[in-house]
Amino acid sequence: MAETAAKQQDGAFQIKGLSGLSRTATRFLKQHPNRAELAVKVALETAASQFDESANTEGVPDALKPFVVVKPRGTELIGVSEAASRLNVSRTTVYDWAEKGTLLAWRGTKRGLTIPAEQILGEGRVVEGIDGVIDIIGDPELAWEFLSVEGPFADRTARPIDMLKDGRVEEVLGSAASYGTATT
Image (cartoon, rainbow, N blue to C red; front, side):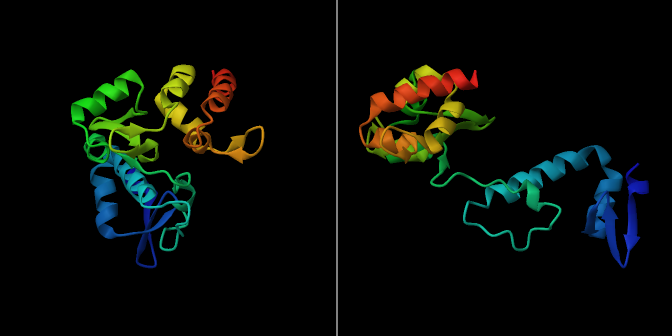
């Protein structure tokens, strides 16, 4: 199957629309056709993780540009150890806060929790109201999506996380209730 899909053109190899594959990559595909999908996924995830909103895609092959993931502005996702360090608490406390909904976190990989750093204000402090948003929306990852995307409020358009930082918890919780209803 892979052998018939690979052909040589002008010294470069082309496989199912991806031109310019090296001989080594083509050989890998021929020898391990079942692993090719996994290899492509890993490569795309690695490439996507290196780009943010301001990143240019120079050097990324045209065939891969549609797969570049653009993170919302200000998104920094950290793990348990980094969160514990920034909060000046133990890793156990981070896990406990995540379980209680004090700290917004979700299991993103087999390795551990994914934690949006923006909710951490300093030693032992997280943005007030996070727990209420999690209670209303339920899923922590969906709650972060709600918090990090601009939406309409009475006097302005803002990200709910910024509104929470301004102490406008009740407005955000009201908005979260309608967001939770709209997405379930």
